[in-house]
Length: 366
Image (cartoon, rainbow, N blue to C red; front, top):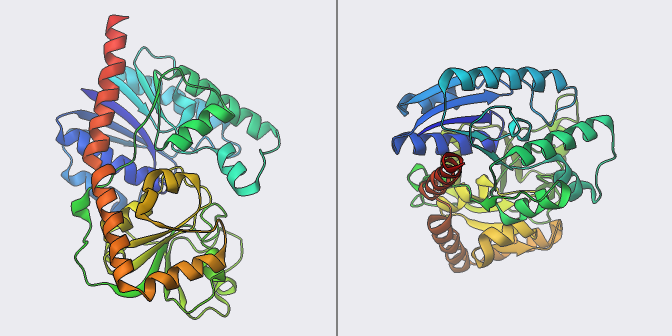
């Protein structure tokens, strides 16, 4: 089967794409991959050297959730139409909504990785104002969902959010994201520090909770420290000698940090799935998680939850694990076992293969 996949090079979607494309290629499928947003750095594409049957087409078209993006959407849709005609794929797999109604006669999957409205609701407690940008964005999402042969989300919560804020897709399913366990080292000796990964400036990731947490736990944070033009990291670190901002890291650097961290703190108040906690779990870290519905759906009793958005309770939970090695080991084992049982790349790839076969079979019958 020949699958044309779209992706973007920012954050977890690119990691998801790496696992999916690698798994499909190893299963004997041909993949054409188109990326939007910034051209990836060399370390972001190093994985492609080991993937056969991959045709990669990087572009710099802006992403659909950005403002002042209409021209990019129009031009990128035209680009994809021409590409479909050139490579003749059997199925289209879109990681953006705005291509779901592309006027081509090929079965298509639209993946609801996240969306602006559900993000806004989680962060601000209300829907965004109906500005021209939001109105255009909503229309792109609605049209894309309506044009999909099947809509996939990485959690039931995200699938429900799509139905709540846009429309109920006629054909829909949940396919959990997955990672390859062998990429991570669960056997490394642990050090006494708490790790967290996320954009420090992003209110959805809420890394700021770790800067407000009482106690002296050693905390290491990976991710962009400030939004361009916004406050500097020195202001964030004021008076917190136990908190270390490490900046962005490559996958190999992150894997090393995960392997040595005893505890992973997942502070997000909006997280349609969350690959970083999964990577930590596969590295045998105990998970301390914000009380949000996605984390409960995915991890259940394999994690310790702190009161929603409460830095003081987060501090208590971290101290609880730091001072009780047996409990920490128990929760690290729970997290690892859950990750290995539910969230592997091979499981994810197999379920996408089934989805592709399903919509292609319907198209052939039609």
